[in-house]
Amino acid sequence: MANTYVWKIADLNRDLSDGFAHTAHWTLVAISDQVDSDGNAYNSSAYGSIGLDRPETLEDFEDLTEADIVAAVQAKLGGAEKVTDIQDALAARLVEQITPTQASGKPSSW
Image (cartoon, rainbow, N blue to C red; front, side, top):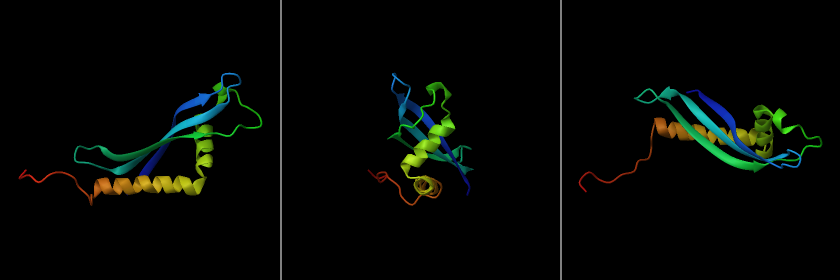
């Protein structure tokens, strides 16, 4: 099973005085290459918000790229090891969706 991981920035909070983007709201979606009986890919997601460090030289807010902010978020989260931990947790959720080991519900006799 191969998964695709898509990091996105949902929103940024910034100071109007100088454009410093101080908080990033991020999402991560894990998409399995396996599909359910309706043909939909299994997926799982995570999201969060994190404060960003002020750089020595501020880039104009309009010139920021999503890739740069994603990289800053990943670094603030703890780097490659933490990114891998988050992705592994989503991968485990996908495995549980595809081959469940837990269920909920009431007996049909109720």
